[in-house]
Image (tube, rainbow, N blue to C red):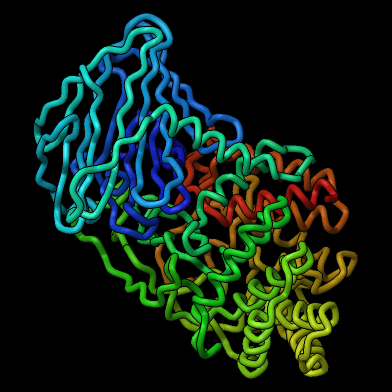
Amino acid sequence: MAGRIEDYALLGDLQTAALVGRDGSVDWLCLPRFDSPSCFAALLGDQRHGHWRLAPAAPGYRATRSYRPGTLVLETRWQGPDGAVLVTDFMPQRERDPRLIRIVTGLAGQVPLAGDLRLRFNYGRVVPWVRRTDHHRVAVAGPDSAWLRVPTGVHTFGQDGATRSEFTVRAGQAVAFTLTWQPSHRTGARRVDPARELHETTARWQDWAAGCRYRGPSREAVLRSLITLKALAYAPTGGIVAAPSAALPEVLGGERNWDYRYCWLRDSSMTLAALLRGGFREEAAAWRRWLLRAIAGDPGDLQAVYGVAGERGLPEAEASWLPGYAGSAPVRFGNAAVGQLQLDVYGEVLDTLHLAFSAGVPMERQVWGLLKALLGYLSEHWREPDEGLWEVRGERRHFTHSKVMCWVAADRAVRLAEATGLPAPVEQWRALRAAVHRDVCAHGYDPDLGVFVQAYGSRELDAATLFVAKTGFLPPDDPRVRRTVAAVRDGLDHGGFVRRYAATTPDGLRGREGAFVACSFWLAEALATIGEADEARELFDRTVRLGNDLGLLAEEWDPLTGRHLGNTPQAFSHVALVNAAFALSGQ
């Protein structure tokens, strides 16, 4: 069985990612890209579906772990009756072939260790043929091959469909394993020096992290969030995935199991905004180039989600051979949200373009042309119902948050036109901004309740209505804003945290979720915005503590069981942490 969701650490090379548990087992790894089929899928089943465990062979060892400061290099210290060892796991940033390197270093005594490698390509479905070459075990199946370089003196053997290793490490000794993926038609994996790769990987991450300009409270949590967000960016194209995992359940044993290894315009826009606030501009330029390529063509064909290289077709399918995490089925790969209308993404994209310009990223004419095309489409379609931020799998509705973000799109377009002086129908955009504002205030606000509601004509609360404060739609001292913030705090409370909407609100799916981590940070930010600094800080600190021992956050938190839920680590959660931290610090 897979470990708890909060037991997993993230490794990554800016093109894909691995999840490794506290027990030393890598239970999820897709190669060569985030959205490629996995070669380890024990996360969604058991060891038969692929994993790589490396740990002391005998019981009685306790593991503690941490990242090297400012990096994604994981160090796990095993302490037990025979001594202590340090296992260092990392993925070097690469030009071509992905590698996962695991180095065992003896700290005290002598510790027997065991390795168990089960490569199962195509999401745990394909068992490869394995052969031995000079210092390598080579697994081949279809288009995939994986090469395990085994150190001299380590006994390896095949057993029960796995490649097993047995060896002892003494104090001062280092033993390194390197797993390399490459297309199966290529022969011979390039050898690398693990110690040199470790040094270079550490230096690259720390050089990047040194650019963080946040200097307020909870700096370590903010920096860890920014590193995590950077790890979710696909370096070759600039696309940013919502999470590196797929089908981790929002309800244990339920059907809310989605594939998040793609680039939502909303999530990637928010991620970029957080990175920009943190002082990182290079990612903004790369993402903007990805955006231009991904949404080229008719603005009416804008999708909510794309592949990491801008792919449009992401067909959703069920993997019947995988039992799912903790029996949560069906396991889904691909995502049907590509066919949904989500009007809020126009606001997220325009807000990020505005923020990038404010941060010093020049406005290019090609980008300006795209902006005008998006506003032209939005001006004709903003009155339509949509599936909204939460991607409901039911009837389209006029979601208040979607309309607020349409206002944001028009507002940021006006601001950019005024700042750049570039040719634009500014008066039309001002009129659009005013029309949307009147519409939201007339239909998204319930005068009897005195608050903004989830959708026009409804009386349901929604944490996304906090965006009336976050975006500047209304001033923070407006009574409607203050009452909405209070209503979300009191009406959507779930064990001291915030649901995204009431548990009784229909969304087309069975099962009740936990608290949505990002929504708790949104509330903290909104409280800070309306001047409730002490309450905001207390909620912020409480929500930060939901992170695991490494500071990683999943999508949701279940206060009843004290468990993480949903895909992990989740960009939305870490973005919200960063934004709330900046709001609370006054930066």
